[in-house]
Amino acid sequence: MPANREKDHQEKDQPRRRQARGERRIAQLLEAAAAVFTTTGYTAASTNAIAREAGVSPGTLYQFFPNKEAIAIELGDRLMHEMRETFGEALAPVDPTTPLEEAVGAAVDRFIAFNCEHPVFFALMHGPDIPGRIAEEHDALHATLLSRIEGLLASLLPDVAPADLIRTAHMCLGLYKAGLELVLAHEGAEREAYIQELKYALIRYLDPLVGTRLGRRDTTRATRTAS
Amino acid sequence: MPANREKDHQEKDQPRRRQARGERRIAQLLEAAAAVFTTTGYTAASTNAIAREAGVSPGTLYQFFPNKEAIAIELGDRLMHEMRETFGEALAPVDPTTPLEEAVGAAVDRFIAFNCEHPVFFALMHGPDIPGRIAEEHDALHATLLSRIEGLLASLLPDVAPADLIRTAHMCLGLYKAGLELVLAHEGAEREAYIQELKYALIRYLDPLVGTRLGRRDTTRATRTAS
DNA sequence: CCAGAATGCGAGCGACCACTCGCGTTTGTC
DNA sequence: GACAAACGCGAGTGGTCGCTCGCATTCTGG
Image (tube, rainbow over all chains, first blue to last red; front, side, top):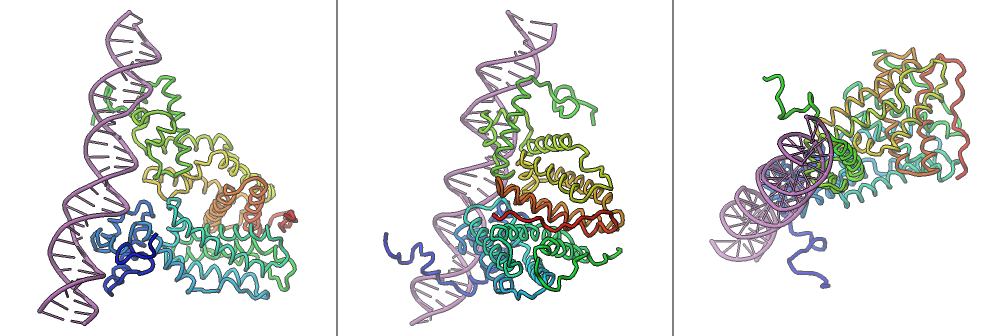
């Protein structure tokens, strides 16, 4: 196979010369795609609808993306990048003396904030309708999150077998996703209440594992608002 | 509008005269549909694929179902019916002296068993790809489950405000769904382990709400299998 | 045994979708 | 100002899908 073509079919070596206009269009299209994906999901979203939402023609969309999948991939990449830089390593390093409540509370708060700001993230990760390539990205993110959580748990719970640690990490992520769905489904005070419930469920789930730790406060639910 | 037509367009008053052959075909088609929905989801499933899976022609399929949606509706109805008769009122009445562990454990066991036996149930309820009518059925089931759980919780936790009760019911269902996903994703011993984790998470979440109850045993996790 | 209904078929219809192509417009460069 | 490249357009193409229709076959009641 030839090493490199000239002006034709170049995809990765020469990312194609873009004008400022083009970059703006790309951002515009990704924003529109995020909106459409959020409301209809990936498969049900039509490229024509995305182009319409962005106020351009279908042809213009395909000037910047080779196909529909690439739009979701690029969107996923940017989200992942933004996620990393939003709370960089905030999940990994854990001072073993940190109280469980604080560690869980801080992690949940950050994730919830991110997901509220980027609802398309949940839509892309949660749909059973995602084709091959995106599923890989999804799995990669999933694995990353799991290993992060696993590391965090390992620092909190030194005396737990690895197999149990992995399972516990899966459970934490699952419980978080369940809570997130409820959080996103509500607003205002009710949303806050669900955030508290989520933190509470996670803390109660993890607490007894923190067997030999000092100063374990009781995790009994605080007095609830009488409503 | 006329009260009833004769032989034309009758839909509900005269369910159309069926032969035994027809009933068999319907069951066959629903089974095929369940298989296809389970593997590909509702929207991605094509009626031609369902017909092929059932070994009949597309035309035959439409002899028994007016459209694709009706297949999912009928499937949902039969599932719901089977669910009701499988553990009828098993969720509703709760002896207030029942230990929390038993109540939760029994309910989870029953639901997990049902979902393992009918994987299409999870596929139909979990997909974000579901059109209007089915979503209504979904919501109806959701509401039914919620009120059942709410009733169960009310019998267990008499001194909790209604608003908190509703929220707690939502949380329980969400936590269950999260656990179910993990349970279905594993097999054998690992599946059993996740079932235990799910029960444990629910019990720990609910336990402190059972404030003024007698004989509350400690819910510390039992010694885990050493792998 | 026979009329009529129920069942079964599969090519085909219209709609929609991802994607393309030819051509006109704007922009950066010399 | 001129040339090329990037940008922009929208009708059109091939393909899939839900669904229909005309016709053949099988069953049922009288």
